Length: 132
Image 1 (tube, helix red, strand yellow):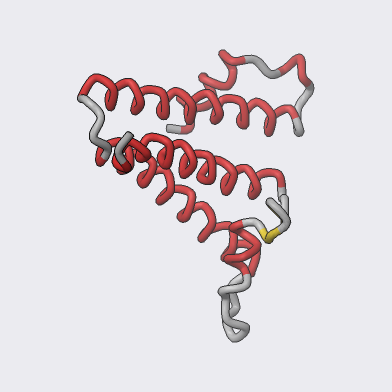
Image 2 (tube, rainbow, N blue to C red):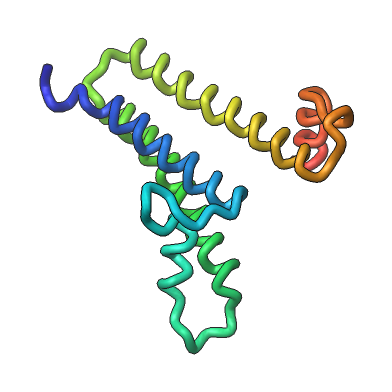
């Protein structure tokens, strides 16, 4: 197997890191794999002479980092030497993974603030349509 076929696997790893970067913000996690989470590490990049809230600064940069990782995951698929049908299937897999993870996170986050009986997929979809 040639090295270029490693790109789909790299894509999945980058996708995983993207999802974790966003998840750590939502869960307010400060450590991942024994090291500071992305948003915690980003807070440390802020100089002490600014008036910005370090939490907002760290969370914002981590969200942007996650978005970049999302894009890079697609780049790895597009740069692979897989045939066109495989590339399309991999891109669909990535997209459905992000969508399903998003639904799950949305429901989890809502459940933290609402009664479980008030949460269902139709309500999630309806609220997303109203926001966009």
